[in-house]
Structure formats: C-alpha cells, structure tokens
Length: 131
Image (cartoon, rainbow, N blue to C red; front, side, top):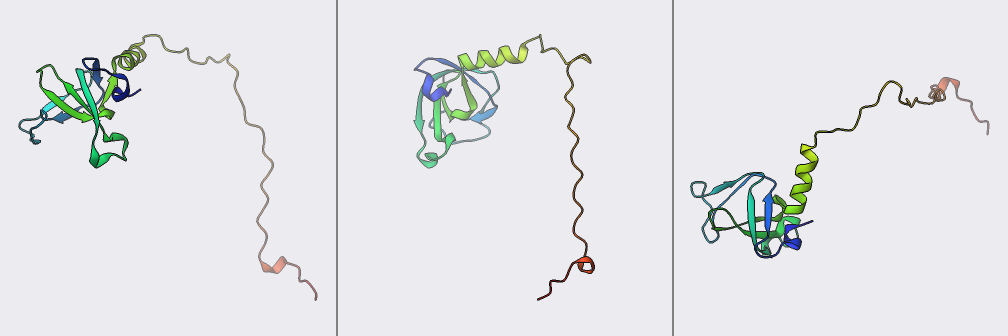
C-alpha cells in the first residue's frame, strides 16, 4: 500500500524511483539538489496533501529524512513501505524460475473455422424487385 497510509513517524521506507529534491524550505536548484536513487533507505516524518494537486494521485507528499538528517518532500509515488520493498526484492532476486513447458506438455490447438462468406457481388447480379 501507500507510505502515506502505512508509515508512522520514524518508520523506514524505500525509494522506488530516482529523483532530485532540495531540503524543505529551500527553492529548487539543480546545484543544491540531492539525487535519490532506487533502494535508498529513508525515514518517514509525515504526509500532507499538496493543495495544487489535491485531485491527483501524486498530490500526497511524503516528508522524510535522508541519511544527511535533512528533511525533504516528494510525491508518494516514488516510495514503498519496508514490507513491500522486501517483497519486491525477494521476487526479483529469486533464483528458481517456473519450469518451462516441455514437448510432452499439452498443446492447445485452434479449432478449424468456417469459411468466410464472400462479399455480395456488384449491381449486375442483384435481383430487381418488380413493383
């Protein structure tokens, strides 16, 4: 589920997409921004609804602390709870894959279809209706 709904103050959650952000209260600048990477561990502070995007799913903003102990904010769509992150890691690092189908496996064949009807011929073969 959502970090905004499931995390409490101090909970660890993870970044699922890379993005840049400046510390809270500072205007955005590429020079001062910090790049967050997939897998970065962050600490939840709070969530709030951005008034400019209140009708949009990305309107929920997550305020968090990074390793530098500064507060940042970004849309909730960048993050996953620790539980979800661990499940995703397990899924993608799993060594055993499902066995592939062998030649002895049942093969589904298509049923023969009825021949398609030919389109009606032009006006020369149409019957005239006597009135």
